[in-house]
Length: 254
Image (cartoon, rainbow, N blue to C red):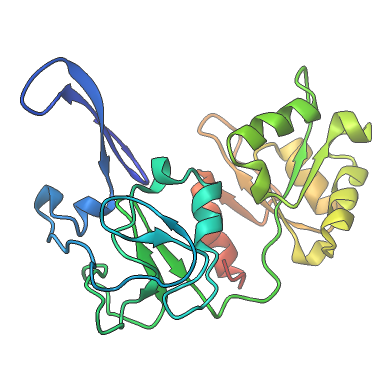
């Protein structure tokens, strides 16, 4: 078995016997779906979304950018960009607050509140109405090698990642590489972001961190196990997943 953020992949015989196959266990079903000793919270057949969206799966629920009360959540756009059914599984509820009188599913051990959530087999999407009106923008500064920026963009687009970024700065297109100030100032200009409001995340001290600090940005360095830990970065992490807690400590609403 191998464990991921969104589920578990097993290599084992099919149910009832037969040859070994890859089988996926979905994360929510091990929290509130009755698997692994968890409480089976089932689905919500009586609470359906009247708004437009994609009907998906066997339980009559849809993926929509609107909640049952018409609140715009953007859930469908997020669902589609990050892999759809293959990533999230089927919806077990429509988008609604846990405090809705007909809501059945909720995260065990957490109090119910008015935030809008939609429960899938593999994940729970949550809408934060108190998020800032100016969202966090994502930019990529890439020193290209044999593979050119146009080709790298095509790969990211095919994987559904390019749509998450607001700007790309590729060295083969600008004619300079990190830590040159131009790479960072150009990116900040295209993102319409002052340097004091920007954070650069990278793993190379001499290019990522030095360039970001020269541009007046805060810097987060990913320190690999075999790397020299000495750094001028404002924070260090071991894995990219640790970025969000760092940003929240700095007051960024993400």
